Image 1: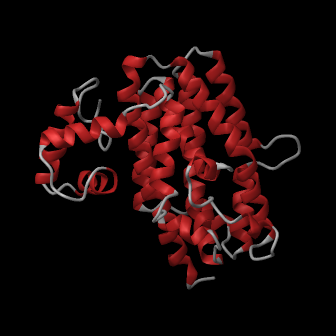
Image 2: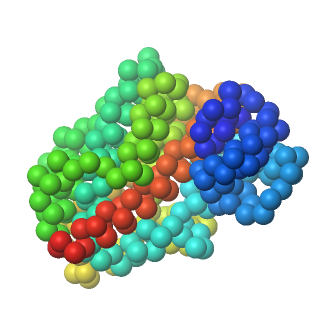
Length: 297
């Protein structure tokens, strides 16, 4: 297993080596490693042996499927009590939140397409390449007469008073910029199945039906698509992701299941955890961007 925060521990390291690394980083007051431990393992100080045992328990695959493990970790991170603060706000989203969503997610989608292209260039696997080509088309070009997700996102921002030109010219906030850098590195430098798992696990955020796997909250309350509480443009954007991401994530993760050898499971899952942690911080950036825009709307 590699370190699920910084990946600096070499591939196929033992759980004891990873736990020693965590303890060293925590003793140096490294906030990223400390926050990850607090959120996923323990908020109390534990020794290397106990940490090693808990890391192994955390990372193990119950049914031998990477996809099942990814879903469980994602739900535990974002959709249990307490949910991610962004998920709480998204149940009945105020206008400033959706404005921040549009402004910050623009940078996410730009990176998303680059990540998909990197995956295509790093493999000869036709199944993976065809999947990513379709994904790029959906995000940037649209399909079957439906505008691209990028276009729908910009329309949502405009509907809340944020100029398209201002979104396009803006720079991502620090949390988003750091997350983008991690995703870019993963997709350029690691094998295609590692990259696909790290990126397409994130599409679980808008997947319908996670309640049957233990989620306490949906991405947003579906009633907002009908009750007039958000703009027409917001409904169109949210509905597009709500309808598409369930199939997107399941197909991608089935490809990961198919082409990942058991000896690579632990390292692959560490990469997924890095990506999920980056996404956790990025969702916070949506809130912060929205607060920055609130006084201007």
